[in-house]
Every structure is written in structure tokens, then in C-alpha cells.
Amino acid sequence: MTGLRAGDLLHLTRAASVQFGTPIRFRLIRVLDLPTYPGWSWLDGYQVNERGEAVARRELLVRLAGLRKLPTRSRSAPKPRHP
Image (cartoon, rainbow, N blue to C red; front, side, top):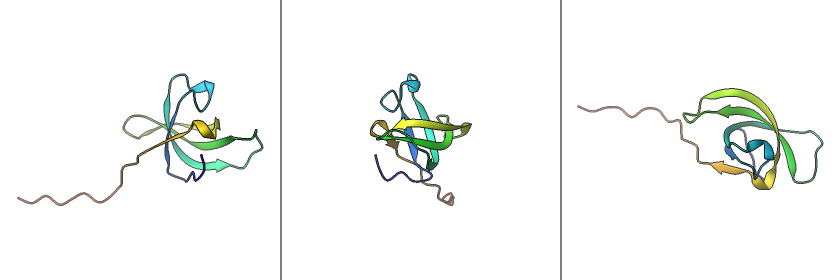
């Protein structure tokens, strides 16, 4: 997978690495420029819960072909309430 950007929400499963036997959601901060195997990359970001709240900062080695982007909620201003 190419085109990863800061703020992307990723769903990480065994397809990304055997360490994700229990899938997690991960909010990307950046792709680290560290040496690794072809098709793999180090990611820096936060593991997030179902509400999108950060629960742990992590650096992860993942197989790029196993990453799946999740839709992100737009953070727009609340709509005004009319009586």
C-alpha cells in the first residue's frame, strides 16, 4: 500500500503482521525512514479504541500489502440547533 498519510486510520490484522492476531486500529503519525525488508515498513502512531481515542503510542513493523485503511470521520464544527 502506498500513499500513507499522517492521520490515516488503519485496521491492522494478521495480514499486516503475525503480532496482530487480535486486530487493532492505528492512527498514523508518520512512516519511519528505517531500513527493513522489501514490502515492509515501520509506522509511528497511536493504537486507538473504538471511539478513536489514543490508548498507546506504538512503533510497528508491518507488511504494507496487509494494511487496510478505515474511513475517518470528518471533524467539522457542530451544526447549529434550530428550535
